[in-house]
Image 1 (cartoon, rainbow, N blue to C red):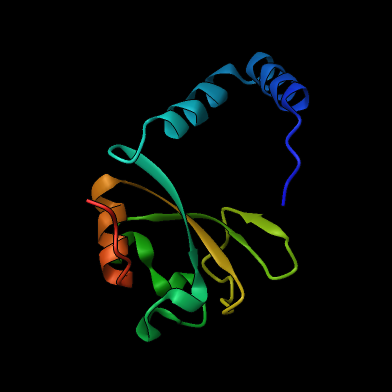
Image 2 (image 1 turned 135 degrees about the vertical axis):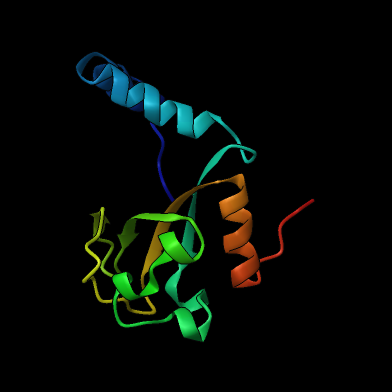
Length: 118
């Protein structure tokens, strides 16, 4: 349900490369590494096991429990929150964006009962 305008996307990417070349190199590195290196995954809060549906993001403690970092979330309203606070209250309508290496993502999927292709 999105319109992609290659000229706009390419132009914005080139401008970002000029303004913040190291940041863009880092983001591109994450994006092109593939499933065997670093992944950015989305997880619906409603898909979390009941013991993980805790009141706040800090109580989920995904970094210490599974090894993934929650780097953002999307609220039901569509609002994106980057680097959410541990005090962020979780709701079943939210999606979490997690970053981790291949093993961490496998652990996350295993914990959530998500089948992954071999």
